[in-house]
Length: 186
Image (cartoon, rainbow, N blue to C red; front, side):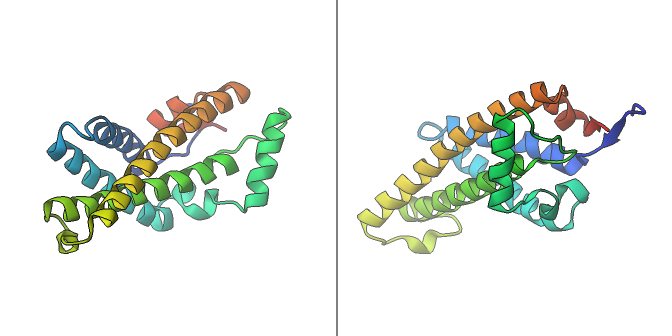
């Protein structure tokens, strides 16, 4: 570690991040064509999300929700300051990044739970197999909600990547490198 760097992202956060990128991508790309792979990737996403929620309470300083969950007024103020090119730099997640994490975790949780429910209704298997027998309209609603939140997640990923690129350029540091090494400049 260089003298002007500090450890920000612990190994759990980094492994979680890149594992989630991989498993969500697999799940999204295999939706209709490779059901077993899609379902297993979805379960992996849910497991990762649940672990991240736990880590948000017991993890290292910058991994904890209390470090990056800000009131809506702070998020709005940060976005305003960003548009005016005067946003301050944060060592951990900035208010917009924290809000994005919460939105992504919620979207992923809803996507996976509705997927498991749909799987239980459609095939009569899985943790929610007891839902078999729900009317077809309920099945279609679950499928629509599942697809909506999966596609919303893709939109959130695009916005997230744009934000990472912008923040990296604005503050002259590579946030991608930081998510690989765990270190940022002081």
